[in-house]
Length: 482
Image (cartoon, rainbow, N blue to C red; front, top):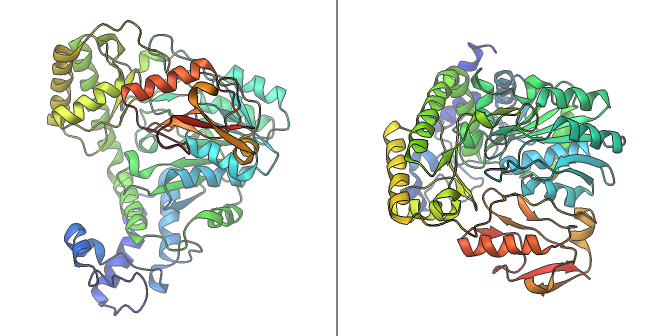
């Protein structure tokens, strides 16, 4: 990485030049630097609304960059050790889907763990690729899905030698990492690309003590959520390519779905955040690691909670652990993770990232302070004292392996009927059911609905999980194939 070049922020600099010029706008957006929408200015401020501008020659164009955006993307590639980087303004969802649409055509096979974000299966609905699911092992105590075990990937490759790519989550929402180097080596030996969802791994690129990055491991493409741990604005992301991938073709794929009116608020936030991480990331994330470790120690001393870390590593399905993740198992105090999540927000004014049926995740990043950690630890101790109860009868597994009988695209577009949940056991689902976050489908199109899955759905609803994906907003009915 060239540290002198990394001091530049070309898009930010171009926006500052535009601000000084006081150009009269006869283009979109129609609020005209906020003059037409004073309430918006009061909410966001003149500085923000004043740079919500349209693409113009001095500012380049995200669809076909030739100047400041291209320079900013090249700086991002240099910072992340990639051959090329694309700025994405449709979230990491758009980056994930662009990877899959670039690697897979209709009817081609993609080897993929089933505990993927919904954006992956949505991409399969769009392009008609056929998933070959690798069901992850489940950690026996805390019930979470682990990473991709190399032997299972090898088996999937041997049974499906015509697959075109292997997709890997690294890390998972909970911080679990697979043996990425070995998976890449294996896939490449069989002529398959490797696509990596690094939505939760931006910080890996800037702290050498964290697990290996997709680009360093030799993966072909990676989707990186800069807005999660990287500090950019929500919905801004990166798609990274290695030298093995045709960047011009990928740009064409991106432009099939990404907006032609890209927000310069998002683009400039990527530019500025990349500069910040390149210049100060190592120090910043070392601090994050220390804060997270302190929090784990304090939470585990409360008793009843289990804030887990690299002790989960087994050399295979949990090859490494992201120690910045503050994942906490709550079931032993008799509360589902979502119940602790709700109590933290409603009673203590603490908003954490998510709660599921057995765990919570407090996202620790470059903006956190030690006094906030103390407040979280104190609240968790209080919740145990005031709300703990017997855990008899609680569900423990976060992941139920599905039975797949149709491709996502076939099932999603098939003739269907809507039935009450109680009448769907044994039928083929034609839509998604998921708790969000984390956005990993409990059911996806093409999967058999079982009594265990129905029990899980009812339990998650009862505990207060935020659920989505179904046509019925109340999740009382499911669409199934006729």
